[in-house]
Image (cartoon, rainbow, N blue to C red; front, side, top):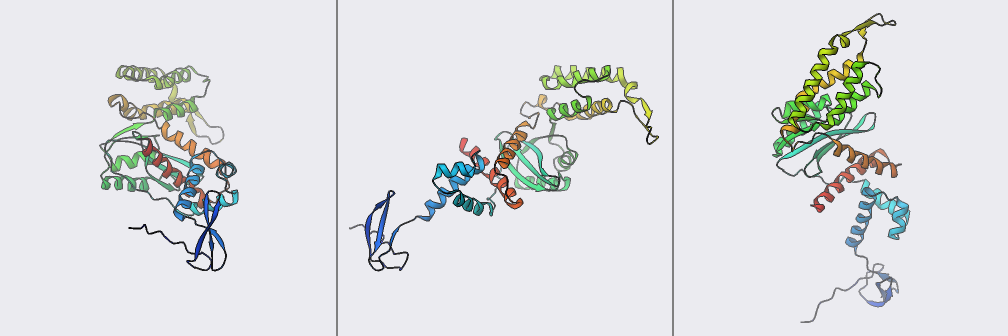
Length: 330
């Protein structure tokens, strides 16, 4: 049986009277016997796939449109047109059912009232869900967490930076699930209050205890550190309770407020500060998510100048491609 070959049709007049007319740039050219026009056949699905490859490189990589134009052979104007078409769209997103999720929750700000909240699985290093919001709103986070429950996600621990709204939302939606405070955030906030060179003996001693947090690895380390913090409180309890009169308002204020605030921050964090010692699978910081935010913002700076809508959609495509990359790596 002879092979049936698909007949080409002239794109100008629609005639099937077509003959081959040489090769240009490795593509077969055709000539229409009816109208005399010359043309090559473009396979749209191949063209679209190639465009998408360059768009993916632009979103995930550090190349500018000028760099991609040199590499692809397409003009900058053409690439911008294609990329804008993709940025007018939102990538599909599905939440997969998973077991044993060690979830990191954190937000990053793009403007004063524009926040991206990301729910990330620390084990697979992939994003489970995200949302744009005005702030880290407790009620919106509760809705997300309840949706995870309905979908059957098995979350065994949460690690957060200690934001009140996130903590309250977790306490409401997952009251019996392990909660871990990010020890890096605890240390960072305390060091801001204590400064690099405290002027008082209480501040110097407390700063030394704060700098020990990152080195706490075992239960003995934990017990020793808590004992030292309690001893510090016994020694300086009267010191942090001292008050003076504010000359401007006439009100009584704490004399050593920054040292007092650092201690209170540590004391309140202790119940959820060392869960990673009891369960080694629990991440004790959100550094992985903050690093992810850093890469995302670096790419946005390279491609600055987008409209707000395109910027948000760029972020969504970035999250989509980053998840795909993790799947392929596995």
